[in-house]
Image (tube, rainbow, N blue to C red; front, side, top):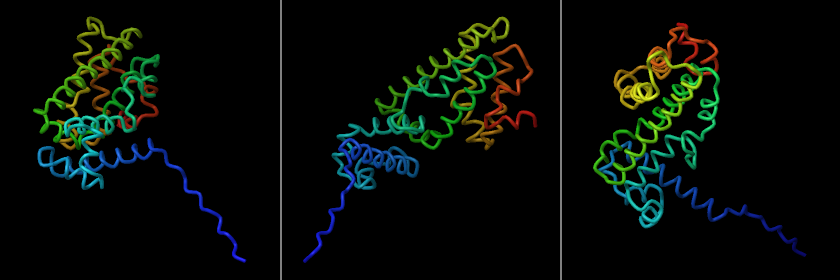
Length: 233
């Protein structure tokens, strides 16, 4: 008499989960190709082949190569899927509820530069794709969104009576947008080869001097952040 083998139950993977995994595979393939050979040289066919999917799947999921790059930048910048808007992330909520003006700026420096660190490898592809209408429109939106978020952050500093005398929210926002912008990061970290920690320490000190009246750094403001120790060095 034969014993029946118990049926092995395979875990049920939902269609949504399968679609998520496939989407991630396409994004990873696109990242490798965009970083390795540039935006123009990368075709949708190459992305499909590398991801092990049909070309139509890439088009069905993202519609255009430009929109694929846009989503890749979003997911990479957030460091999570799906990418929550910056001001809804846990660190941004902590920043907006901080009761010390230096703590507000310290968190902005730590996490704002972490976004650049994640995205930096994709910047050449974004620059190369600048003529693509999907990418160009996206970059304008990113710039406007960043300014709006940073203006809210500066307004929080103003609420805490932190802004140095004679500096209003608009002018302070101009300075923050410039100092915490891509170009300063690119100049010092990507081109001059500063370490991220050295850059953050310099940036925090500079922003405090420019935005707040005080030149004295509060140790508590950076106590749990990556560059805390370099400030005393």
